[in-house]
Amino acid sequence: MATFKILVLPGDGIGPEIMTQVMRVIEWFGERRGITFDICEDLIGGCAYDRYGKPISDAAVELAHSCDAIFVGAVGGTKYDELPFHLKPEQGLLRLRKDLVLFANLRPAVCFDALIDASTLKPDVISGLDLMIVRELTSGLYFGEPRGIFDHESGHIGINTQSYTTEEISRVARAAFDLARQRNSKLCSMEKANVMESGKLWRDVVQRIGDAEYPDVALTHMYADNGGMQLVRNPKQFDVIVTDNMFGDVLSDVAAMLTGSLGMLPSASLGAKDKDGKVPALYEPVHGSAPDIAGQGKANPIAGILSFAMALRHSFNRPDDCILLENAINAVLENGIRTADLLQADGKSAATTTQMGDAILASLDAISETS
Ligand SMILES: NC(=O)c1ccc[n+]([C@@H]2O[C@H](COP(=O)([O-])OP(=O)(O)OC[C@H]3O[C@@H](n4cnc5c(N)ncnc54)[C@H](O)[C@@H]3O)[C@@H](O)[C@H]2O)c1
Ligand SMILES: CC(C)[C@H](C(=O)O)[C@@H](O)C(=O)O
Ligand SMILES: [Mg+2]
Image 1 (tube, rainbow, N blue to C red):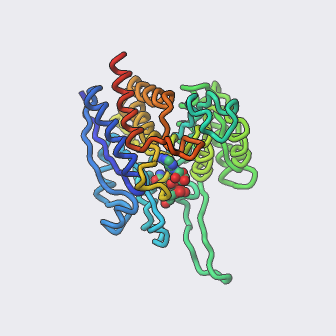
Image 2: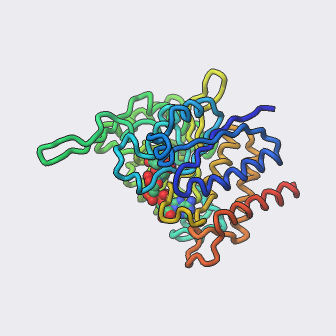
């Protein structure tokens, strides 16, 4: 039986709070479903800066390279706002994504039936919603050169560069087409080909790959600003969306509210298969360190726990266990258990982060006893 080596990086703010619950779930699958995990823990983000003077240590990056999967809680905090960019907590995460070449970031937005009333949108707009955003994660505006704040006749000039090569577009496009094939064979590519050269190249490359390699997938293109509007107007028109790093960041937060809360959105960041068949992988909730609720036991741990469910499917080859965990979460929500972010009211009857973890573990016990 394989042993899976995993690296846990709880990070800052609500990161450690939610990661405690994710760890309980990981341990449950170890004990009850016989998956053997070899677990290491390290620092990322502001806490790593406090300890090492940088947002991730070289040793942690090296460890990450040797692992089957990495689990991140969240990074960031107002205390680090004035640090130079290369030292900011967020850079720890960006370095990991870049170093491990995790170019395909899968951000599924699924609306659980029990949460239809938690969204700010009308029930018929979101009921049954199940879409997947594939965000390019290792290039574009986040990494392009030149970048920086430079002297300028008016004072300063801030520069970031959007750039994409054919290869960078091709590999994320293929990942999205492959996913579309496993779903409803429908892919919408979003960029701004009307105003950006990188967007024009993006559109042409995606179309070329579609024509040559995926004629069975219905490919459409949309300008990303319209895409944001369409996601709110009629999200069920989409199945898989592929987009660049910056648009994907924004559009996935928009998609979060289709599910009821940012606290519900998991993610998997995947690289290319190596010669031994291993796919580098990092799993993390889409949300951040939520400084406004950190340390108060209010955070919703479901995005983190659903990220582990994605790992069961993509890294541990346990699709049945992935479904088991999703079903356990569904049952908890059907029972009316809610963290404060999922309640429209004042949050008085809200479950705490730990209580939500307790409920999910009890639900796992109950479901596995009856199956
Ligand atoms: N992957 C990451 O680690 C990541 C992602 C996004 C933002 N950040 C960082 O987090 C910090 C705060 O950023 P922000 O406030 O713009 O975004 P955020 O995602 O941390 O929070 C946005 C809003 O959503 C709420 N929220 C987020 N996660 C929640 C959860 N699990 N349960 C309940 N409510 C939740 C917060 O309370 C807040 O009101 C910044 O430093 C930012 O850079 C990190
Ligand atoms: C923390 C930050 C680097 C990150 C991003 O912008 O990619 C976050 O917002 C996300 O969505 O994962
Ligand atoms: Mg984001």
